[in-house]
Length: 373
Image 1 (cartoon, one colour):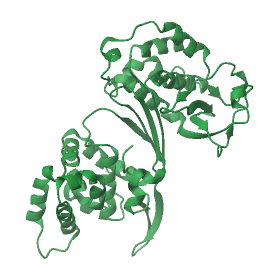
Image 2 (tube, helix red, strand yellow):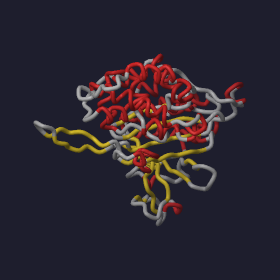
Image 3 (cartoon, helix red, strand yellow):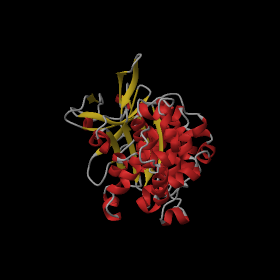
Image 4 (cartoon, helix red, strand yellow):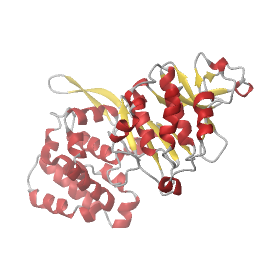
């Protein structure tokens, strides 16, 4: 996940005002991405434009935009200094990326639902950083659901990464001349509150072999909540095509395919190996599906609670106990990490199809065995 990101109240306003679509238009996205990647070297024209447009005695929101852009230019001593803390610099002087995104429309902040020009600038800049616009590679699938932002991606060798962050932000009321209006704090307005999103992040990193487990868990979750035959499963190729197709890895399996000898294993994992489902824990007789996180012995179990899919792990402070006859769960407490809502299911499936590694020929085999039951 990115160092900074746009909280839900601000994001909602960026979407409703059409600003998100403006930023993600390819030409604009590329322009912003180059400045984020290379820094001042790719912003010379913007700095020159700001100097030309800034009138010495002008006092206006427009003038403040150009002053702040030039403040960033002055604050950057050299490329190395900028590269080491560029996101912090962009957030401290957010006018640059915001101006590239929407130009002098920054002065229309009230029309867009923002309490100040600076709050609009920070919203735009944190969104650009959170979406990794500087990164030309296709290594992340993300979506928002209310206050939560989710992501699924892999590295070049195919290892799994599942992330989730709470970007609720804080709404507050502030007085104007005529009435109180509702505004928001962007995770507080201090830069340190943006950084690392105040520890509001959950994630699972695992070896590439666990893509199969993650996909099967999502399918079994779908079955448990009566969604086995949704289009994202029965017509998974169309679902994958709708987000631009799959992303391969620099591996022999991706290049030449797998051995094709795993059909028996998929039979067992799809048809016989269970996942934990609330109210049906006593049915678990075999070791359930789990993901070994990182390089330690920390196991994460998919657990269907209501219509949600929780990924739970052992924790002395946890409040979840599994009423199972299986000895491994006796007296053990768990806590939830990543939690998916029912409405996340289509996105979870699409993101998994996109980054499934390393032998993508396993996807149709798994889904076929799942649908045939």
